[in-house]
Length: 420
Image (cartoon, rainbow, N blue to C red; front, side, top):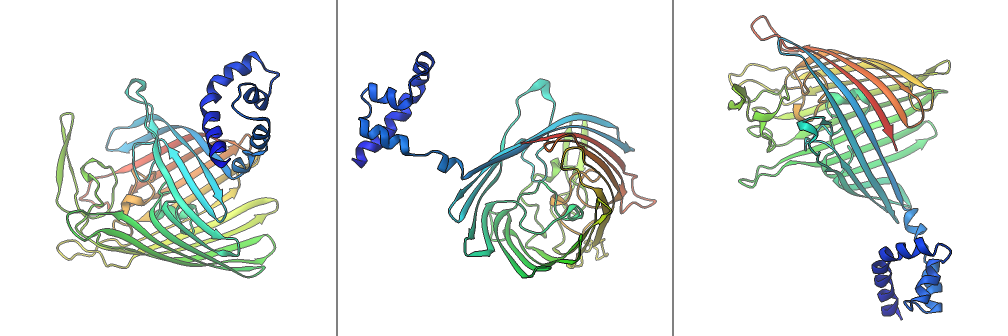
């Protein structure tokens, strides 16, 4: 009987497509009736098939995504200005299977670790879709305080907007994580996050680059309408000295970290010199604080990050390099429900070797570190799913002196985002 039912399901799949034509002609007949008339199923077997509910599987799947249309302008001094149109598409399901969750997300982009944007370019040439996330997560029904995750996953550490001093919002680390969450009372929660992240595997030696990160934090609600979070993280980037994470750094615009072994590549008739491997280690301390409150009915969020590379970075000649950074700011309002809005202002400073430039915010200046400047934005939600946002960056090179080149960059982004 089981073998026969298995055969029935195979036949069902094979006949489903041609049956659609039959349905068009015989709309009043049910699937059960058609299969019975064709002799594919007996009357009893048809009843069994009819009782199998696909909704049980469908209920386990949560599908989500978003489409963002962006106009972006750059005003660079002394380089040329630039204007471009871009889009971002992300879509994927989460599938619940008992205590496990399988997460999958596909996204547009060019394969970068910190961007899923794709420019309108190349005479309308087709654009690529990449695997943005692919992970397995476990959270026991009787151990809700523990979550284990492996794969290409969402950032496992507590982050807010100011945390992009260390982590670009589009960065999805690859490796393993453990998240602990202990509710001590109604107003106090302790959390611990740990991650073992693969940065690059070297086939030529045994000096693979990893990130081992640990974070401890507390959530508090000291009074009505006031919530605070304080977290401290230590990120140990291993074997970074004399490595470049397998990237072709001659092709990147990422600024910041002190590198060695200059290399040259050609664009058109122009030769460009870029840096090669990193010369320092990165043991990064990141302290994050957030306070959420209300001014009347208006939500207000204050937040900030302090970043320091404890590895004491130096030039090859032994001169100390910049190892500190911070970002502070506030968000008034919250653009989420229909007719809601928000305004924000942040100020950021990131010295050259405060953290790994390759995974820091890619929108601040030309991305990376060695930047200081202002960030402002405003957003408005027409519906729960449709938002218009305008964001402006005013940045300067942090290490700029009388003898270095001026590299002022202003950047404007106008985004229309539809979530689904």
